[in-house]
Image (cartoon, rainbow, N blue to C red; front, side, top):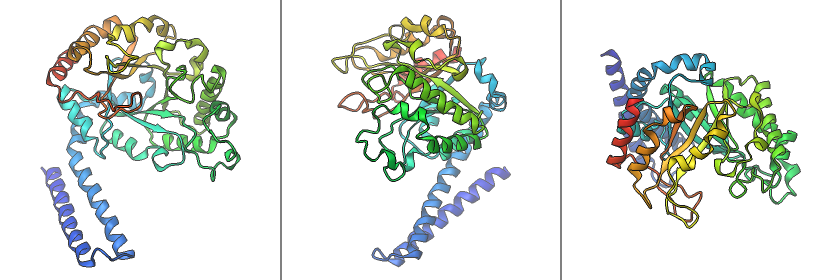
Length: 381
């Protein structure tokens, strides 16, 4: 009761402050500028942030309680090397400070997700820094952050990296430069911030590195041994910085093979990650594939590495087949048919424009038949 009273008082205070700021800004006028106006704007932003935090406090308390079983993993991360329970997670591209969309998805599925997935590219931009606030919020919610870290090099400025100023395409042969230490300042900063989190963090570095068409860290720009050298170098920079709380996911594209050529080695990898997305008939290069066809055909080859497997992007579009049945068939006997799978991460993005000229919607929260099918099966797990 005391906590609820305190929370209610804080929300009321935030609302009153917000009203006061609106009146103050109106009084100052639209044409004003200067330190007072800037200060009021900053306070207004902080009040909005406070309101968002207050709105998410109930979710944080409830989720932390539901995820109490995860606490031993977060205190002793070696347990993550082979979790006793299937680790479910999700990515949602509608970002909110409180991760409200993830919480809403959880409500639809009747589960609290131990992993929350975010994507970050390399570079000098603000959004390419280590996602401290997002990771803090995920940990506050009781979950563990999963970061897909994409080594795009074109966003590094000439000002900060002047020796590359004459290089028109910074992504060209980029893995060799990473391995040489050219980006160590950036990598060290990430490592330091990761260490400061004080809890385990999954990092999926340079995914689908064996795909010759998609990403600049792939074989169209880099030899396999150069990718391996870059991976090991990044890994070592983190270790030297004391970021031993990072759990490393090596994530090749299953269809392009050459796993041995790109594998950094057992001492540098904790998990294997595999994306499994059914595009259906949305494009001329795709067709309706089952989960067994996308993932199952490569399971034996991936299992040979004796590492737990994470399905890092799991989802299906509804174009060309029955999406509800696709999820049923994929999930029904997954734990027994594919026992090396120890984690499954739903790809719940609403606006995916990375592969086709038209944005694709992978979300299913509002598809009642699909959510009920998923909910019923994972409840048995």
